[in-house]
Amino acid sequence: MALSTVDVVEKVKEIVAPWKGKQGGLIPILQGVQREIGYLPEEALLTISRELKIPKAEVYGVATFYAQFHLKPRGRHVIRVCRGTACHVRGSLQILEKIKQMLGIEENETTDDLRFTLEPVACLGACGLAPVMMVDEDTHGRMTPDKIQAVLDKYQ
Image (cartoon, rainbow, N blue to C red; front, side, top):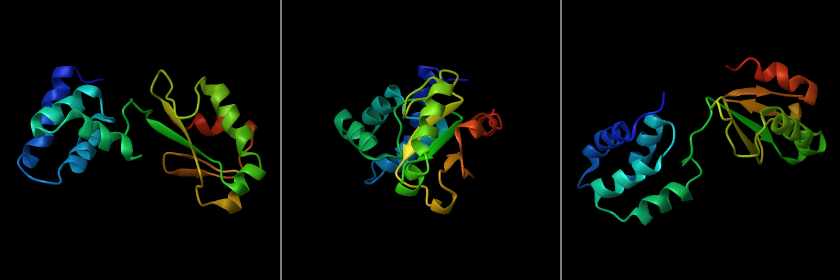
């Protein structure tokens, strides 16, 4: 269930409180907010700016610079499709396209039901299993377009 704006503000204030008046707290605060809420909604970033008395641009700058932070809700499950050389040669593009078609989303998007987020990645480090996709922390190797549905059905 999504938090209301009031709940977001209160949760952010709790996370910011121990850092008030201290240097170097912005990244740990952003990490804490994202851990609690799942992403960094605009109201959270504005509250951090107000509470720390730093410019909104600085908060947004840090939140958008680091790939670990997300400004939009993400799915319960993150699908990562390898686009490294070994996977590419063995058909990872077809895997990626099939997932996009099945879920009705593009790269770096989330399904409307917040079940899946699709992220292509440069390399998953499992070249011997190419083509590879991961769902959360589970690696699925030697993928073919026919195997995708069975894999995704495991993740509710």
